[in-house]
Length: 124
Image 1 (tube, rainbow, N blue to C red):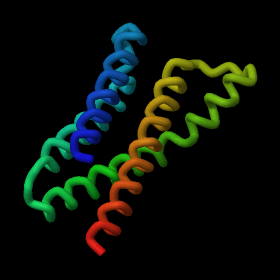
Image 2 (image 1 turned 60 degrees about the vertical axis):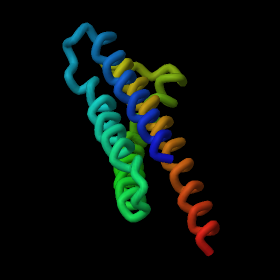
Image 3 (image 1 turned 180 degrees about the horizontal axis):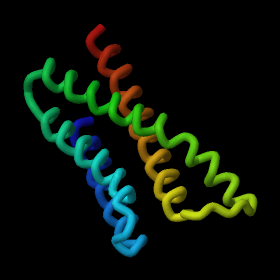
Image 4 (image 1 turned 90 degrees about the vertical axis):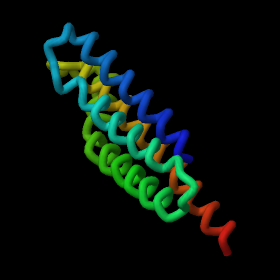
């Protein structure tokens, strides 16, 4: 799961960079997914260890970061759905980027929880 965390971190970094470039380098908030991705990538690298306790610690921190990131982007999913229905917002790219981040982090959290459950069952 640590390598998956690194992969999700890289994808979020790329999303943030793409969003920053797409806004014409004018919106530094477009880099928020890149910062979250950097944190996840670092935690993923730290979790690649033989020490099971350290691996569990770093992966639990990573899933907590993912969950907090997902919870903080839920309002943008609602705004994105409203955009699809025809509502106009001043910064539609920001809403699209935050929605993509939300979906990616939700999938990441689901994978982590499934992995934690499988690991617990394997120990029992």
